[in-house]
Length: 156
Image (cartoon, rainbow, N blue to C red; front, side, top):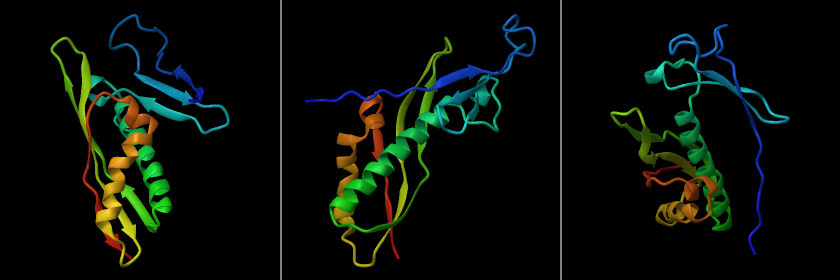
């Protein structure tokens, strides 16, 4: 039997310069993500759409959530499989497209984890776990674009 999980957060637009949305260029594309009991995340729109390039945008956050979810499940599955991971970092990228009417979507994402494992680890076995992650990760199971994995393993 399945169980439901409820997640809550609050999004607060912070971009009113005093005139609201009276003109398209008259307001900032900034907001805060406020999750109860957690630090506030200051965000902006994609710089291509007038956002602040120094702040995370929704696309950054989706890619980060996808990568983090994959990492956490990978670590869980590795531990269960007897594979000792001593380090994990990822440099994922997502490819999107924008249509002439301004609508957009992600076409695909590629996760590129660099995983440190104990010497003598069966890296072929370690690599098979990435396909298993997709069965469990909430984020990966929820998106409608393909996710590829290009992992690198380092002993040490």
